[in-house]
Amino acid sequence: MRVLLVNDLPVDDPAGGGAEVYVGRLMAALRQVGHDVDLFAGQVRHEGAARLLDLWDPRARSLLVRRVRDFRPDVVHFHNVVRELSVAALLVPAPRVLTAHDMRLTGTVDPRPPSVRGFVDRHLKRRVDTAVARRALDEVVAVSAPVADSLAAAGFSHVTTAPAPASIPTHPLTSPADCTDLAYVGRLSEDKGLFVLLSAWRAISERHPASRLLIAGDGPLAGDFAQIGDESVRYLGRLDGNGVSKLLGSVRGVVVPSLPGLRPEGAPLAVVEAAAHGRPVVGSADPGIAALAAVLPGCSIVRAGEVGALAGELDRLLCDSLHAAERGRANAEAARIAHAPKRLVECMEQVYERAIAARRPSVRTREIAYSG
Image 1 (spheres, helix red, strand yellow):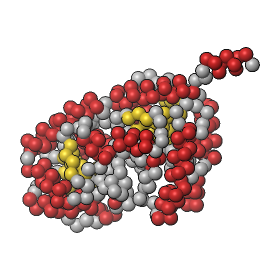
Image 2: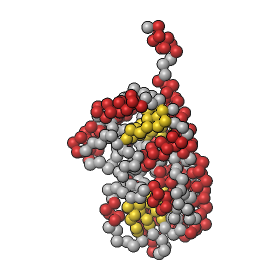
Image 3: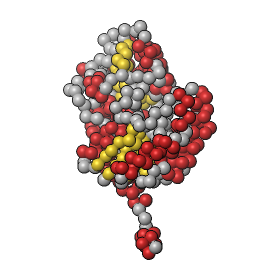
């Protein structure tokens, strides 16, 4: 099968996030089983006043149509095209599939843009995106059940939930029982609950003088964490995949304290990656995190934004090495089955086949065409 993957950013872009990692892994997994895969990503970037083209960009669509005509894919699989490429990119002459990595297509507003841009997002762009996507797409894939439910409620049909793909650890793994540090890995922004995490850590850090809180990632709050004068908190900056794997294999547990009231998660790869590396996870009661925890038994869920609840769970993880080891082992076993790239490929193959069939002319239509 010939598959054209479409994403706003290249899979190796320093500004990329979980969606770019996801696309890169999907591309590698599809190629591994023999599919012919091409990638259209990073060819369009809007800066300054050109950000208005995020709403509708005919040039981006023309570039993509040209790639479709050259590559002649059986199916075009979109990711995050409601940003740089704009929803106009969906209108290409081929079967169309889209993976929703979050709830933007259902009206959830990203809190990160300035207020004026957020107002335009809320009252114009999201409505256009949703209306065009509902009509243009043959199949929609959600990265978690909450995202799927949100899409269905917004009027999308043919929604399939597919598992996020986990990576294979690239470094030897130390048992969580023999590790003393905790880690956060991800975007450094307000919606990720980092200040809640920092307050929870400071409430227990004196009880654990041999432990540190390790922060890895980049984003708007990077400067705040780079200047923290607390010796028990270490900011590592943005790590590549190899660096993330090394970090995850050497910590007691991973914390994902997102604030769904600001921006709900889709299916954060930080949870999946931690589980694949045999780490227990402490996460907030975000719908996307909770959906992963339902499959990964080594995940603990606390109420989002509650410093005391988060501090208590982190304290228990650091005090009880046996508890940490058991939960890490349970996560690793579950992730090996539920989040294997092979499972994602099998799911996507079925989705692609349905999208292709939906565009295939019926027997009656072909008879009319041939008789004419």
